[in-house]
Amino acid sequence: GLQIAMNDFNLTFAGSGAGTMYGKGLYFTESSTKADEYARDEEGGHYDRIRALLLCRVCVGKFYYTQGREPTAIDKYTAGESDSTLGDRAKSVNTYREIVVYNEDQVYP
Image (cartoon, rainbow, N blue to C red; front, side, top):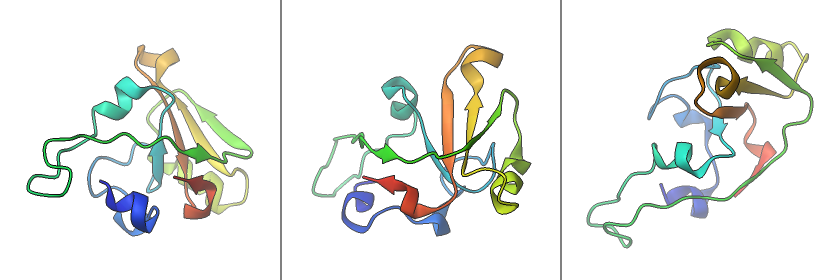
C-alpha cells in the first residue's frame, strides 16, 4: 500500500499479496486498469476509503520476453542472462503486459 511511498519496495513480500507468474519479484504494468486490480483500501488508515496508484520509473535493462506463464523466468535473472522479465499477456491472452524486476534498486517510486 502507501507504505511503499515511505519505505520503498521490499522483495521480502514478493508473492505474498498475489501470485508469482514470473517468479518472486516486483510486478509492474503500463496499464492503470491492470494496476487497479491490485489496489486496496487501507481501512481506518490515514487514507481511509482511498485506493492509491503509484507511478514508478522502472529500469528494465535487458529483459527476458515471454508470452506464457513462466515461474522460472527469475532463473534468467539469477543466471545473469537478463535484468527483468516482460510477460506479454496482451499478446497471448489479450489482457495486459507485465514487467517484473528482481532487485528493489531497479524501481524509483
